[in-house]
Image 1 (cartoon, one colour):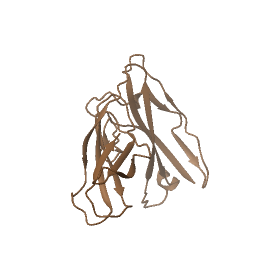
Image 2: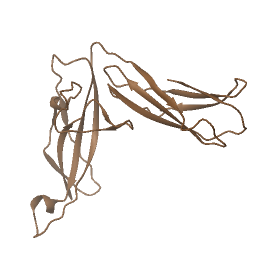
Image 3: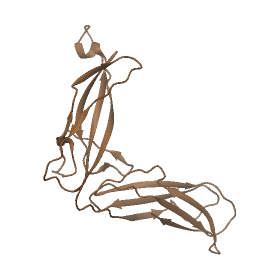
Image 4: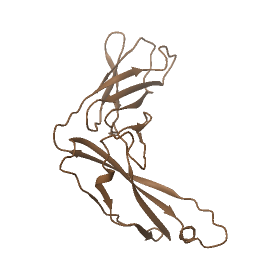
Amino acid sequence: MWKLEKWASWLPSFASGEGGHPQFSDTPIGGLGYSLASWTTVGEESIVIAPGGTAKIPFTISVPQNAEPGGHYAGILVGSFSPQALEGEGSTIVAIGSAIASLILLTVEGEIIEAGSIREFRTPKSLYEHLPVEFTIRFENTGNTHVSPQGNITIYDWSDNKVYELPVNAEGGNVLPNSVREFTVVWSEGEGYSKYEAVVTL
């Protein structure tokens, strides 16, 4: 059996790098107003789950009356540790712990600003002898709530005929306020030597 210890952790308003990975911290970083960790209360301090079992972990979010409109974010982290390690049994204990996070994305009503722009659209090089071609799109969220930019990269040949269309962010990944997220799209199907133009629309 495993005993799970929980704790609520801050999720700052920026991701770790541009790959869409959240960065957690025990305290709010730089006084940023996008965290809702201080509004969140988790119901159970610890719980024991049998092998193959499941458990519900209740939590409550109390939004203040003066909460700023827009997106607010937190993560509930659940860590697993062996009962022997927690109880200190044995003369020497080597414990390996792990944790998983459940992200909370909450929007407070009010003046919601959904805004963003494409900071960069590029390929590693301009001349290819064959496919695949990798496209990189860097999208900046300049609003006050999370957004999920989606669209397509359209490939045109030298005579302006549309030859291929590639979806961007089909998985619906979010971009947090005041952050940039990088999306990668690979063109791997097609044939024929030509000059091509790629247009991204989000």
